[in-house]
Amino acid sequence: MFDRLAGNAAKIVFPAAVFSVPGARETVYLTFDDGPVANVTPQILDILKAKEVKATFFCLGENVKKNPAIFERIIKEGHRLGLHGYKHLNGYKTGRHAYLQNVIKGSEWIASDLFRPPYGRITPKQYQLLKDRYRIVFWSLMSYDYHSQNTLEKCLDNLKKKTKAGDIVVFHDNEKVRLNSVSLLSDYIDFCRAQNFFFGVID
Image (tube, rainbow, N blue to C red; front, side, top):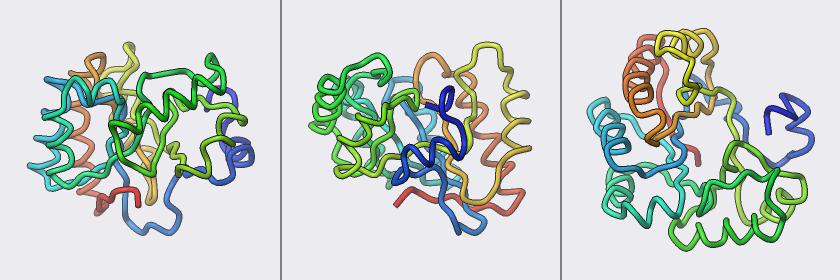
């Protein structure tokens, strides 16, 4: 979505969607997309547990099916669940009916009133079909942990420069970003704590 509709334009097209948490004093909202994935999500959960941080996980139904024990751990350790669909479909390349069916199938595995479109890509018509069933959650700050040309230092420096109260920050728990995401997450949490930020989950 953000490659075509940026900033205020996206908020006009999707007026009921969540991009940040206004009025959240000194609080940052960590979110994770695409899991749960073996050898990745458990490492992230270990860091969150050790640092006593709660986050919101936007899960894919097909990954919940593959990794039910990890999914149960997310719940058991008190994190918030969000739906990311069953498969990771690009809304720009998917018809309305197929997109809706993918979300419905995902909801059979993930009980949540939150939905984040994969890639952040959703058409206005798809949005209209879903906005009364879900709070559609985008983000205000991207970690870029998935970008192959970004070093850990570059990702962290970008986060340090841009983090502000109320930000919804995107990380990923998938194989593609395993090394970056785990290391980056720990350093970012330490930075936020040093800046006197707290961590919250999306209500």
